[in-house]
Length: 164
Image 1 (cartoon, one colour):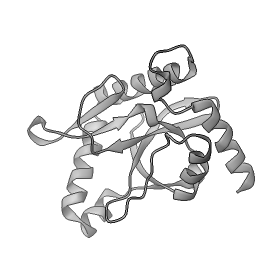
Image 2 (image 1 turned 30 degrees about the vertical axis):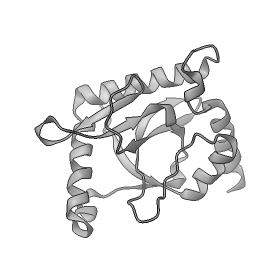
Image 3 (image 1 turned 180 degrees about the vertical axis):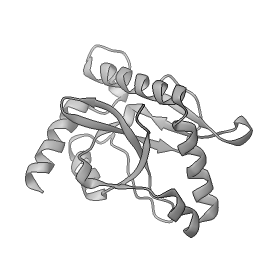
Image 4 (image 1 turned 180 degrees about the horizontal axis):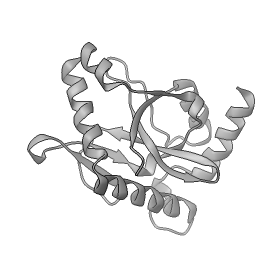
């Protein structure tokens, strides 16, 4: 089974996506660590989808809670904000380097990484990604309005690739 990786994403690409869907999350927050993406969680329509990590730890039907030491919730993957991403705008996170520059944060990221890559969790992450895509694709689903518009984001991604 493919490993789940963590990435930073080019903020300019996020700005492009936010033009077509305001629900796309920010990835740069002044005075805080950059938001990371986890992926690839889904391949569909010749697009690779990635899901943002969040400090939110409340369980919901669209969030995958990540647990750390002592089974304490430490983060989540928020599937309603999953986005299609071309490889060219991703920078893979090197946890070893991160630990050398910020040991406490690096340890947290390492815990998240290991939890996400447990085989049963990889299967669940991919299952939730498929479910999120199904909900977003169904305009009649009662939760559809909470999800990014994946079809519009795919079109924006293709336009971005042409313009880049």
